[in-house]
Length: 423
Image (cartoon, rainbow, N blue to C red; front, side):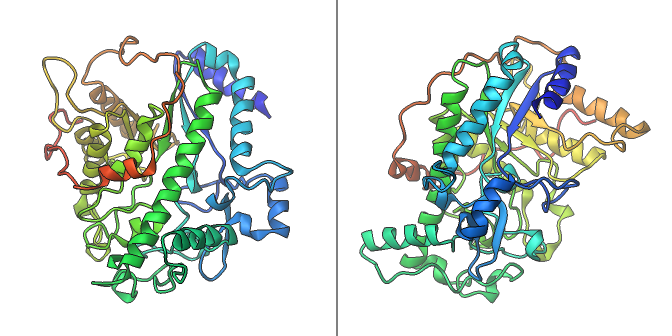
């Protein structure tokens, strides 16, 4: 299997390019843009045949087999190994098999998959189960392991009578159709806040534990760890931020649900990769109450405040100047700085994606101009952002300390309306 990867890596090396390797522990297929279908390994699915609770589960007990539930992270259900041990062993295998490319500095970025589509989130909006944009999605924590975890947490907090939500609606509801997200709904009660804190904290600790394993595996390599955060821009303009909450991002008008994730990443000196960098608010339908520009500004600002390297990608294939210029604006929110690097700039950008259409005539010409503009019209300089050998992660940050950065929610840094270096 690894020989095919080695052939590709060799081509990249010979072309003098660098690689970002994605440690994928999720199924490919069933998400936006997926054109192939690669399920998780059969022997893992065999465990799920006898015990379907290893998979993410919604309230109606529909199973999602694209990623294992966070609930089995520490459960030795896989021939004696836990899910986290599976992920760690997979990364060790990559480290051993691809040593020549890691040692040669070809691979510079290890993006650690933490959920469906490789993103650190719950599978709250699965098209495979009938979700359609802009449905609020559903909370996905009804496997027996997460149910037991919540019960234990509620009991410890003095509320053994609290149950997981039963009033949050279904995939394609709008927020006001549910009791949970309605004005003065459950999400604003003591019980609702307790649940949302538990749900989002589980995700943060999941990312933290797997990054800790990745750090041990790639110790001493000249690579940077990264994680990917999903751009849930629909319902951003309403107070309940319903679609973000179901995905596991506890983000409200007065609570920064992304700064907490960024703070956890400081422990591992990991970078945060965010999406929808090409989107403009005026391109979205009004009924979705969507605000991709404000969302991007919030997430990037949260990461920069924590001192992280921030990267982005575009959510959908675009070949037009408007999309490229929006990316350029987000890459340098205050434009070009004549006296050195700008105070805030993207560390990297992943372009989605290479296709025949991209390489045709005008599309390719525009893309080449875009790449040049991303480099501020400067030539490539290998000495910029050099990578040091990876050091051991710092000690675990207590969750109470992570939560301290959620409030007060600070205004994002200023972003210019249009880039000063358009394509």
